[in-house]
Image (cartoon, rainbow, N blue to C red):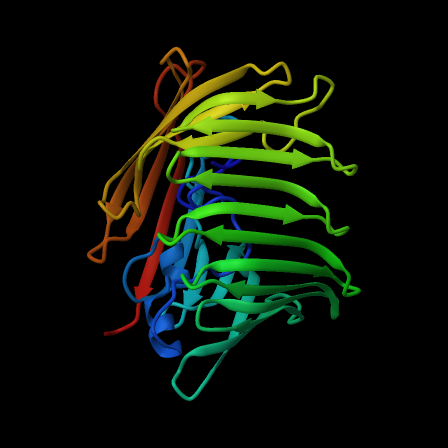
Length: 350
C-alpha cells in the first residue's frame, strides 16, 4: 500500500511500504560480498551492464496532458546526465543545460578491499559540500546534509538481519530529534509494521500488515494523539475507511494496493467514507521490468481515462537509446506524441 507513487521506484505497497531516503541494500555474508550483491546506483536507475556515462536529450512536443493523482504513468528518466564508477556507484548526476552541467559530483572513499566506506557529494556549480555518507555493508549508516557549509540535517540508519533499514532517525541542524521511522519484518522478510514518530516523540502514523490474515491497517494521528484517518484492507480490498467529516485532503486518503506484479488499484477516498477505485495496468518489454511499454489507467467502470505508450530503440546491452512517449486522454481522442528522448550511453570495457 502506498501514496501517489511510481510502482517501480520511490513509494511502494505495504509489502515494501513507504520509501526511505537511504540506500536500502541487500545483506551478504561479509562486508565484501554484501556490496557485491547489493543493487548499484546504475541498477536502481534501470540501467543494465557496466554503464560509464549517460547523456540524454529531451524534446517535448508541448502536448497538454496531466498525470492523475495516484501511481505515475509516465516513467521519468532517472539518470539523465550521469557517470558511474566501474562497480556501478554514482560519481556524477544532474542535467546539462545549454552546455553547462547542473547537479552533483561524488567522491568515493574505499577501503583496502575496494569497498565504498564514505561518499562525499558536492554541488557541481559551487563546489560546496552537499552531503556526506558513512557507508556500511548494507548501505548508509549515517548521512549529513549541508547548506552553505552548515549542517541542515543528520540521519542515522540501522539494519535488520535481512540487510534492510530497521531504524531511521532524523535530526535537524541543531541536533534535535526531527523524526523516527521504525520498520519491522517477519521471518520471511516481509514488512509487517512501519511507524513514524514526530519530533515530540508521539506517533504520527502507523501501518501494519499480517501475512497470515492478509489484513492491512493504516492509522494517522493529530498533534493531540487523536485519530486523523484510518482504513483497513483485507486481501487487497478496502473494507473500512474513516476520515473526519471536516478534514481536508491528507496523507493516507489516496493510496494504492498492488493486485499482482503489474496491476495496481488506486483508492481516492472522501471524508464521507466513499472511495473511487481506479485500476492501473503496467506492461513491460523485458522480463526484468526495466523498460516500461505501456501504462493504462481505467476508472471503476472499466473505461480508459489516461494512458501512456512507449516506443524504443534498444542497444546490445538492453538499454534504450531512443524513446518516444505517446499519451492518450479522452480529450486528445488518439495517441499523441508527447516527448522524444535520445540517450547516448558509454560502457566500461570488460
